[in-house]
View 1 (cartoon, helix red, strand yellow):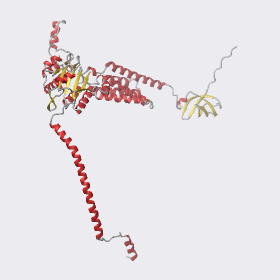
View 2 (cartoon, helix red, strand yellow; view 1 turned 90 degrees about the vertical axis):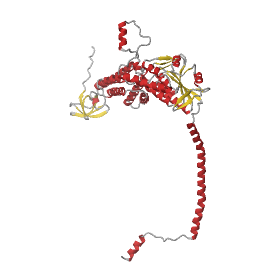
View 3 (cartoon, helix red, strand yellow; view 1 turned 45 degrees about the horizontal axis):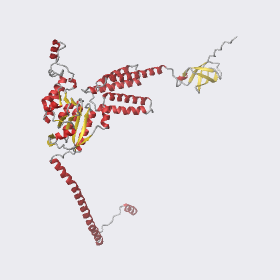
View 4 (cartoon, one colour; view 1 turned 120 degrees about the vertical axis):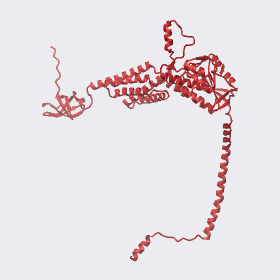
Length: 515
């Protein structure tokens, strides 16, 4: 290797520094810095320990207090929250009662549930009962005011409450499922009365219990009996009469219910109820609690706007109307984009209708038929089939609407006149649109090149059998008979590509001259 080459490679090698041990001055400086850092670290550690001590001092008393509350009895209620269960038991009332119980539990407040109901949906009733059984505060169910009732679902709720009370001139019972409460009579009894004659009266005791007619009714009755007997055993109330209320639709007045150990108290008003309940021992959760209800302040909590809105829109008839308005609003928006109002209104109504149906006990078969019917009627609008899709859609809609809500309460049944009216209106709209579409199909074309057929034009220039004409404000190439001249009026007979086929316009007939 040449010397020059060796020098080049040596210039490319990395620079290496020889290790030199630190001098005594450097060691002294490092030791000084290290000694200066130690007190700072110690001070930071002590500050952190002080912060942790303060935090522990704040948290430990709360933890000890919570442990003492968990080990001992629950704190006494400071007020009595009054909730009102009026009208039919449904999704709105269930939501109201459940939220009211949760709010009262957060405030450690006793709950007075004032009841006046003819019954309602089984699912909503069970939701309320589950909330009562899981409530950490006592619930005093009170059938009031005078003339009120706790029928059907109200009887179950009364049995589930920690204290059951009624005002004078009230009643409870008739807890038979509605599908079994039609008053049918066993065949043997009916046959005996038919033989005795039409004037023979029924027995004073009401006859034998109504016998279920099929396996589904047996199943419903036995399930209801087992449920109300379990509630009666839990609260120590009369379970035999509870079964009688389910199987025979038996009812009792307030005084009779008190005498037969169906309720605990008969009170004139809410303060009297609290006075009589004071000192009673009830079972709340897994422990017994002594009620201290004397002198409690009453806090009325009526239904709020959410409960009222939910109560309105959970009407199946209104939910059905909202669905149809929503569907047709979106259809009109799609047919004429930019209108905005039909689309916005349709979207709001559709969402409200879907929300209402989500809280109702729906039949999936009914919902599927309603959706199919709406889809077929919409398809008839966009692809007219001379009414085949429209008629099929209306029929599917009517069948689905009649079985839409799977409830045993007549108040939640869909109105047949409403279903028929909606179906007729939808079918009429479908046929109207189909007729307009058929008329537009038969009408002559008035746009595009084919729309020029039959119109008049004027020759711009002509040579032999072709030239140029002006038609509809445009200059067109044209073919026609020879002999035409510029300025002649022509009639367009056909359009072939970009060429017009024209014919001379016949001269207008002259009116006969008068003598």
